[in-house]
Image 1 (cartoon, rainbow, N blue to C red):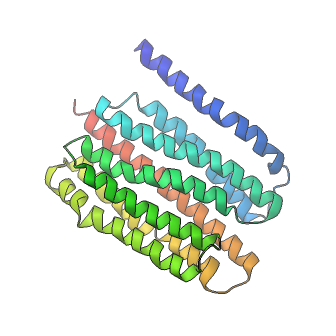
Image 2 (image 1 turned 135 degrees about the vertical axis):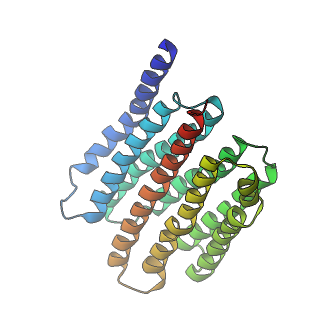
Length: 262
């Protein structure tokens, strides 16, 4: 009991310690945040929500059984990495009014593969899962992200990049619905894990759909660049709020449900 208490306090202090330097740096930019800057406010709101989620997930690792600790820790890492990048992205937007494309894709190149790993981890907590499931999810994720970045950064045409990125996303969807991951979940997972798996893949389909919608509005409709940048960032920020935090909460609920059966 004492060790758990000490670990909980240490986890909370670690989160604060990791984020405080970034927060101190970012506060200089927040002095210029205008109340009518919807994009800047959205960056601020999600960065704080991600900090809170990080502390919650790390502290809750002490509540669940050992086989679930890795899944919950990864959820905390996702929100921690995202929170750190959101401080930087907010400062870029407030200072320049430009879309922080590089920071956003650095964040996604770390956090989205970790989210995909969660499918593998929650199944591995209850049954043996072939390594091929992990690698197929990684390949689909990297194709989706790299193509999206090349399009948004102007390295290749926006339409070819969009098509390739969508193909990577559809490959992931096929794996978690009709592929081996989906079949293992249906055949071997207990009810709580099956429910979590269904909710998580629902986020991948419907929550992740927000990203291509943002891409279309930002790059494919030929609107005013300034208005497109505002719409693009608000859409992306909303999607990250849903997809990163809600994803972790679903895993937390499954972990607690299974752990309480001990």
